Length: 231
Image (cartoon, rainbow, N blue to C red; front, side):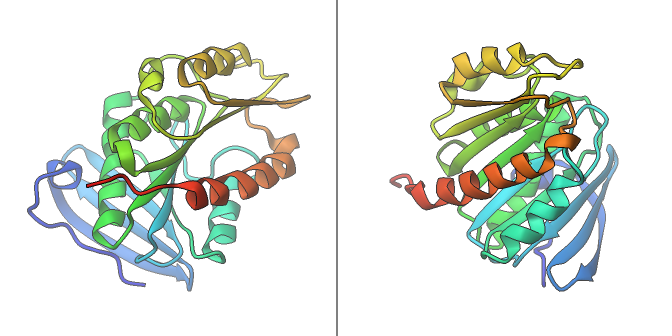
């Protein structure tokens, strides 16, 4: 598949000041894209067709990473959605744990997808990435079809009341790193849905199937219900 290249159009992507890019097709449905900037390397794992109109942006926690919670949920979910014509981009931050920079990276990834034809997005974030997902969903505005947080933190989600899309919060009730009360607090801000998983820990490895099945239902439904905002 062919991915778009950077242009001089002002936006999150051009603001990164990309010095060079490289891309390898790992499988027929997965490309590994690297964008080099003076502030670090932005790595993207892009599942599905570049021209897909519906795109899921998936982001990790404070330490970064591209596999997400569960047992490598993001890779498995990306391959699953590609079969349905929904593309996904797993975002490898330039500077993990820097909320502003990580939101910028996610917005730049959305811009890449938009240049290829995307016109609606769902953003999924784990742990610290929950705040990235909320902030990105707010920044994308009417292009946001849904936001999902998994074992989210509260810090960085203060603007959640500005979201104008369906929101799902998932948290394990046995999470000892970030208690489920964190998702309860963010839910009050976003007015979204809260799913507590009995026995679920912070990474939800033991709850991988539950997580996969819930997202497999929720994300396509969010895209199906999405209404393009009036121009």
